[in-house]
View: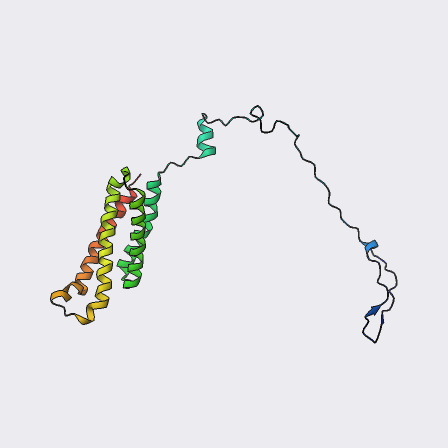
Length: 197
């Protein structure tokens, strides 16, 4: 459909800065304005909406409702905490196997130890603190912290100490033996943690 517009007057301009003088065409008659329409609810109003007679009770005794709709969490909080620790241990294991530098190794160990400290405070006095998996984590935390300290001290003091006497502790062979022992300890702990149910 083609619309025909009225002739437009040629604008007149004033040379003294007063602006446009003239009339503009009426464009509103060619376009219809849309008005918002009101929607009606599809349900009937109920004065007793919140009353006990109108609301059906939840079928909590029906196992299909409980297992499908409610989906109760079947894992304990302890198992969830253990599952968060396993990737941290795998990261430390990757650091050892790939020979990452001291800074990366110590950062991973520090994060792991902070998590273990949180778990110690969380499960203090509870039965979980007596679990074999929890005790292995505490031992691993202490051992990993001592090796992280040993590696950082070796970086700091190695240039100034001889390889005999006190300097023997910072020898590469000693540090590598400690890292091998830590690697086997981490692998054993991961196996125990994956069996926690």
